[in-house]
Amino acid sequence: MPKLTKEQIGLYNRDGFIAPLDIYSPGEAAVLQQELKDLEASHPEAVAGRNRNNVHFVTPLFDKIAHNPIILDAVGSLIGRDILVGGTTLFIKEPEQRGFISWHQDARYIGLEPENWVTAWLALSDVTTENGCMHMWPGSHLEGAREHLDTYDEENLLTRGQTVQNVPEAETTPIMLEAGQLSLHHPWVVHGSGHNSSKSRRVGFAIQS
Image 1 (tube, one colour):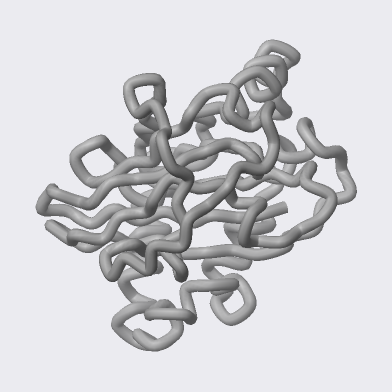
Image 2 (cartoon, rainbow, N blue to C red):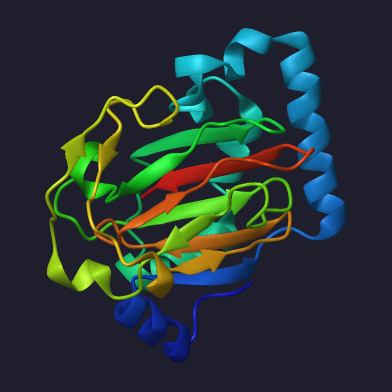
């Protein structure tokens, strides 16, 4: 996928997100999946628990993805070529896992300023409604910061269970991706994801730039 078109940039500005973008071929995505499995087998602590935050600092696999020139071209179409990888997170939802991510805005807890950065979210497995894909609230970024309630729900994968209340879920859009595809979303867009009710892993890698 080259740089974004004017139409794609317009959709991003209107909705606060755009997806899917083809980054890796199915064969390339399969290689990345196997590299992750090999990493988990040889150094399980490197990609477990809190070590999934900023995992690109310690694993060549995720450093390589974070600096993929195709991803950088897409991000650069929105924020320009002066790009800093501000942080990354590896999200893994195991089969039939109850964990979920509540409705939230990335900018409320990541703390990068000014809020003109982008989250690039790469699917390392197929991502469906059944295994807990993200849902976006289109246009919600246009109103800026929203109040979040810290729930500390044990099943919430966010650290404080921070949650935007009264989201009109019927108006949200599921972001279903095939392995190797990418979504881009604005730091103020309200989004979240449900639990994985399937029998397969859901694996995603988020890059904030």
